[in-house]
Length: 184
Image 1: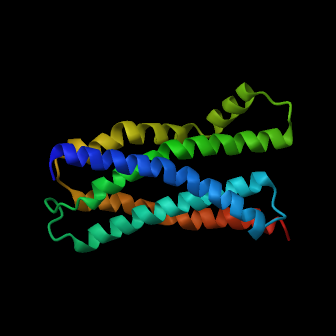
Image 2: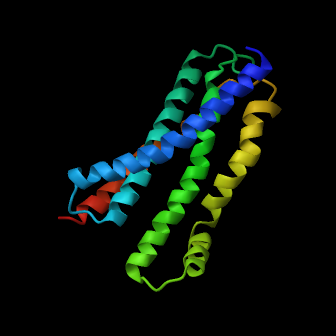
């Protein structure tokens, strides 16, 4: 695959992710009206955020497992699926920061409708400073490291990094159960 073609495929995957994550969120938030009609919109929004996070983590974990189990040379084996998923998953980091802020905004406005946007942003930033930093630095530093700087070496180790996502669906499921259990 030529360099130009690879860049176009990467761009197309980024755009696909740019639409996939938010549309999944909107669709699942909407469907919850019928699945759990007693939940507030804020709770449905929060559950959708966790659901999409789980989907992304599951996809990254599957890619990581595939590469780990099919690598024969941990330094030199090349598996393009890692870079392809990095292109697709890159947009998740932007999506996640936005929905985390919207979720915090909705929760704060539900508590006190008079709260200002500045107050909510400041509170959100103080509470989520590290995760915001993670979601900004990973695309700025991590993405070039994955796609350019590692010079096509170490796919096995990168796959092991992807496996860090394996706990996310379980943590998300716990948070979803906490929201749903409030109904009972």
